Image (cartoon, rainbow, N blue to C red; front, side, top):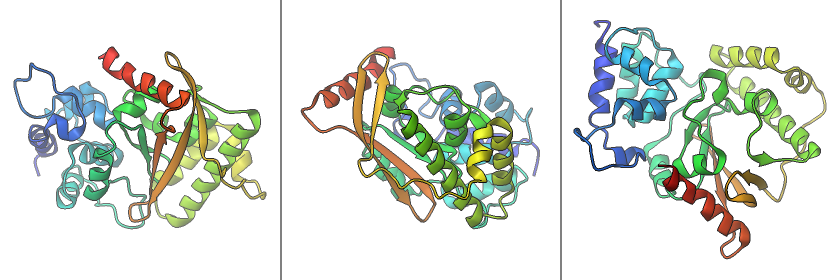
Length: 279
């Protein structure tokens, strides 16, 4: 393969993706029917400059994480995803590696939730997808890079988010996340990227090491499954937070809703309305 085949393939597949199919708002002035470069970059969580260099063949060694993110954003088929890995010089991930893909059936399900905040994480708690309503509720995610896209790191060492926890709720949330990551390591012992993540978390957050080495079992999940969110414009609201597990691809799909007719529902609607106002 020539060194620019990967970039040329990405560009060709980018141009065939309809913006509305990828959840990108369609404006009036579009010279081409496909995704713009900056739109694909935002969907994949990479910089537009890096994507430009990839497409032009000036960057020729994308990581496996970048390949997976691009394949996901481009909505390619399984054989096309495998081709992208080979063009980038990587071995196609097998069952011993944490999957970060979304099955077409799951994508269709998420497309039906286009007006509901939804976020998807893989078994390592790396961000797979955050839809537009989620970003309107919780803040933008497209600028996150590397370990910033990991929920365990963001909980233990990252900047404060919009979810409001008591001290006890925060401690329990941290313990559950780390305990779940330990189970992931047991399921994927050959995943070197997962091992590197654990090392990076241990270096970044002493609390992570404390929880990782603890013999005490993590607290049970809260039966209420509710989260309080402090939105900068809409104010404070308490939402139902339901996490669904896609067992086949080992992903966590979290959906935020409010009971119709309540003050929380009105504030959630106001928060989601800010997305259109910002654009």
